Length: 230
Image 1 (cartoon, rainbow, N blue to C red):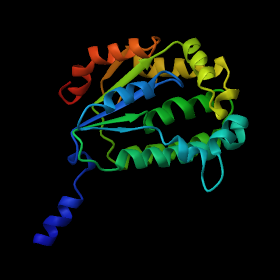
Image 2: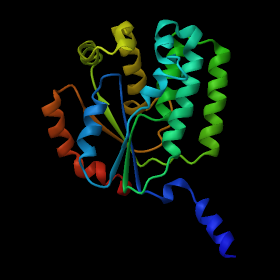
Image 3: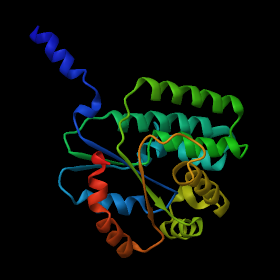
């Protein structure tokens, strides 16, 4: 019976190991890194950034760059890998009281896959395959979340920041792309007219500079860290 008890403990849902789960969502260059860096200075918080380094190097290949160069050919390839790596982030264990994660498997599907499909840059069969995978994952895998922090940023602000940080893969991103992503986020998290919300949403206007944003995070700190009680 002791062996059975140990096996049962190991098989407990992932959320047994930590209490509060927070997703930080927003457009490209909306300030997610600044937000995560701010909260990473608090004890007993684990911060998980997007696994961009993995998306840039899959056994010597860069599916992120390939997708931006030719989304019709490489969209499915990248987004399949995004689903896998985000799922890996969601299901990794930690003993921290709070986990903050940059984006989620939900925004990967509801925002970025959806944008590829709506813009005509992802064939319907690719979209159907990704949707089947997403539906299976979210039905069969526990992905707990207590709060979504949405950094609401004007696309023009994101475009300016994007140019300033000069990431190689992002040089080809036009303002129109950021505008489309913005509208999908607004439909999902603000207007709430597109996809189901897995958790309550806290909207933080994020057009300010780093100093201004850190003040906003301090103002919202208690509400964010008390997410499990919302």
